[in-house]
Image 1 (cartoon, rainbow, N blue to C red):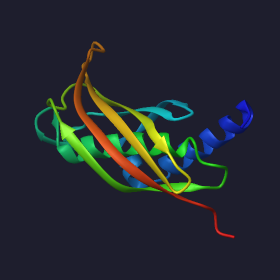
Image 2: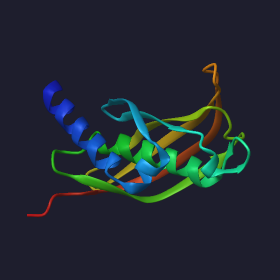
Image 3: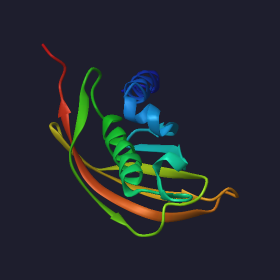
Length: 146
């Protein structure tokens, strides 16, 4: 795939993800997209906290899932889409700070199933990152309708 084809596919991927109501509700923003890798951020919003300034696991999982499955989506042929099949997350520190930064990556890409992962970092107002969760998942690759 050429660089311009990658760019067009990455723009399509970003538009598709940001069209999802949950992505918009979370305030999700892509920071980088490359073949097999995605970095995104969500703000720490009190509406998603279970105690002041600390996100519930649901928001952490969503950030990790979006990052991992979007990373898998970067390797799809034009017109293909994907969807989460399963995921396991391990929470390793509180998700508190100014924002969450999730870095998704492809572990193993197949024609119909892609194994993907993401690490989620709590980022303080001064930019310090602390790993708060790691996710391992799989995404089903769906070809366009004939």
